[in-house]
Amino acid sequence: MVTDFWFDRKTISQIACGVQMLFYITITGSECVLLTLMSYDRYVAVCNPLRYSVIITPRVCLHMAVSSWTVGLLNSLVHTTYVMHLPVCDSREIDHFFCELQAILQLSCDDSSVYEMILFISGIVFFLIPFVLILASYILIFLSVFRMNSQKGKKKALATCSSHLTVVSFFFGSGIFVLMVYSTRYSAKQSQTLSLFYNILTPMLNPIIYSLRNKEVMRAVRKVLETGSQIKDRH
Image (cartoon, rainbow, N blue to C red):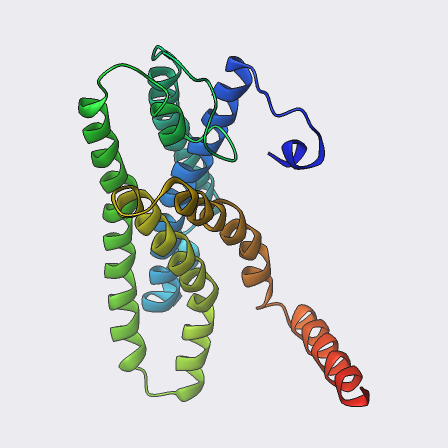
C-alpha cells in the first residue's frame, strides 16, 4: 500500500494479493483473541494478585501467544483460500487501498450471499464474543476495585488496566463499527476512510498507548509539550 503512494505502479499479482489478505486477516483475528486473553490476565492481576505468579506463568503466556496466532492463521487460511478462488468477471480494479476481503469479494461474479452470512457469523465470533468476554472481565475488575479500601490500591489497579482498556476501546469499537455497520450505510469512499482509521491509525497508536505507563516516556512527553508551549508563547 505504501509503494502505491510513492510509485506509479499500482498493480499487484494474484499471489501477492492473497498473501496480503492472509497477513491482514491473520493479524486482525490474532489481536482479537490476544486482547481477550490479556483481559483475563488483567482480571487475575487485580482480583487475585497473590496467585498471579502461580496462574499466569511463562508457560501460560507462551500458550496464550501461540493459540492467538494459531486461531488467527487458521481463520485467515479459510477466508483467503475461498475468496481468492472466486472467479472474476469484468473489472479487476480493487476499489480499496489494499487487498481487503470485502473489496475482492465485490469483484466476483458468483453469488456470495451464503459466504457473506458466514463472514458475518465470523465477525460475531471474532469481535462480539471476545468483546463480551472482555466486558465481563472488566465488570469483575471494577467491582473488585470499588471494594478496595485503599485509594492508592485503587489507582494502581486502574493504572494496570488503563493501557489495555484504551487499546480495546479503539480496536473493538472501530472494528465492530467498520465490519458490521458501515457496509450497509456508507459509500465505498467513506468505507475506505473508515478502514484507513481502523487498519492504520489504531495499530499505530498501540505502542504509544502501551508505552505511556513507562515513566521515562511520560517525562519525555511532558518535556516535548512544555517545549512546544514555550515556543508558542514566544510567538
